[in-house]
Structure formats: structure tokens, C-alpha cells
Amino acid sequence: MKIGVVINGALCEREAPENITLLHFLREYAGLIGTKEGCGGGECGACTVLLDGRAVNSCLVLAAEVDGKSVRTIEGEMRDGEPSELQQAFAKRHAVQCGFCTPGVVMSARALIERNPKPSVEEIKEGLEGNFCRCTGYVQIIEAVLEATGQPASMQELSHA
Image 1 (cartoon, rainbow, N blue to C red):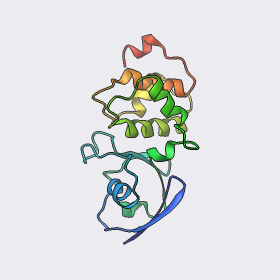
Image 2: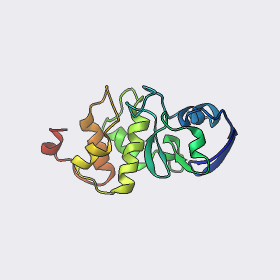
Image 3: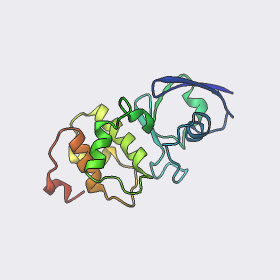
């Protein structure tokens, strides 16, 4: 079946099997390998992308469902070939270790920031639910989101993260 989707602002039209997931469509047909497959069952968040501005697990969405829609991947987070402010904050706050979960966490954070430009620590925790990181720890991730939104990181609030 032919699938036409706007990915990171550019139209992508490809013939693909009707049962392929968005995750595999992005990686195998669109050549965008930044989105990772973790659990394959919607539990870990490594494959999170934005679908019409909403964070979704791309392993749970069929590519056929996105025909005519807009998808933003971690590759679309770059600005003029440079990391976005959010990506820079992740690097500065050491919120990246192995990097496997990072694309999904960044995309979940992006969806949160687009909905709520100044989220509280509690709202950040809620916005990142479903994204698991085994290396970094969540305090640095929360600090990165706070930094990207121009907010100070309160150690008292973060100690309970």
C-alpha cells in the first residue's frame, strides 16, 4: 500500500506492507534510524515520536494509520543542523548516557513543552511517564527539561524525582 506522511516537515511517500508499524516504516522505508525499538510493546518509550503534535509509541501505530498525517522524529528536533535547545540541555545536564532511550525521552519532553511551555516538576514527571531510562536517572532528565524551559531546578523538588 502507498503511504504518504509528512515527516519532519517533508512529504514521504513509500510503498509499504499494510501491517508495518510506524517504527519500522520510519527506520526501514524513510531511513530515519534515530527512533529506537526497545520493548516492541509500548512499555519503554524508546520509540516515541510526535504524531500530529502528540507523543505516541511508534511501535503501536500502524504506518497505514499515519497516511496523510504529520510525524516528527528525533531527527526533526535539530535546528539548522544544530541540536535544539532541548537537546543541548540534555547534554549539559548529563541526561544522556547510553543514548538508547534518549530519542523517545526527548520527543516526550518536546510534546510536553509544546503543550505547556513552563511545566512544574510534577508535570514533567507526568509528561515523561512511559519512558524508561536505566542509565542516567530521572533527576538529570528533569533538570534538562527545566533548563530548556528557562526554569531553575529546585533541589528540594528534584530530590523526590
